[in-house]
Amino acid sequence: MNRLPIQVLVLSLIAVGCVIAYKGYDDDFVNFNRKTDMCVNKAKDQELCDEFLHCKTKLPDPLEKNFNKCIKQVYPDGSFGTCNDDTSLYQSSDKFNKYLNCLLTGLPEKSSLDQDGKNQYDVYKQCLHKVGDKCMKNH
Image (cartoon, rainbow, N blue to C red; front, top):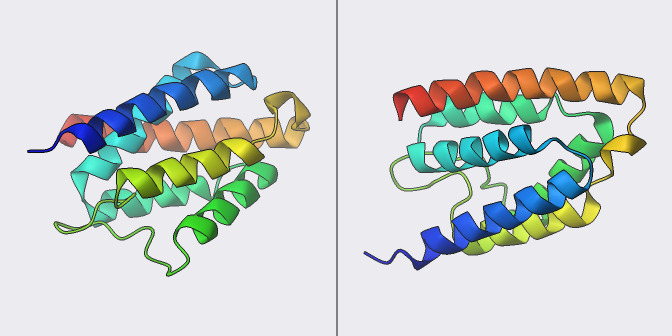
């Protein structure tokens, strides 16, 4: 079994955590977000993937626009979001790394969010905690 893609994914996520925390997003949530990404990707459960993607619609507008731009850039065929026995959410470590690179390049500083954006970010966090807790409990 080739573990290199998994190691690359884990190292990428750790690096992302450092960069996002630098941009003003709290470390605890960044770590939880990373664990949730990994759990949902590994679970290959369409219902869980749908719940995870629903949370992304709760991102503040600048973050949601950045997320959608990166998804379209890395998954132009519309294949992102398919989760089953044959396909994981991010599909490959290469695509996941491209997605993360795009996401981080366009990620705004948390301090640039207005009060509505900060409130919406809190709504997103609650949603993601619900999905992450469910995933980690069941997978």
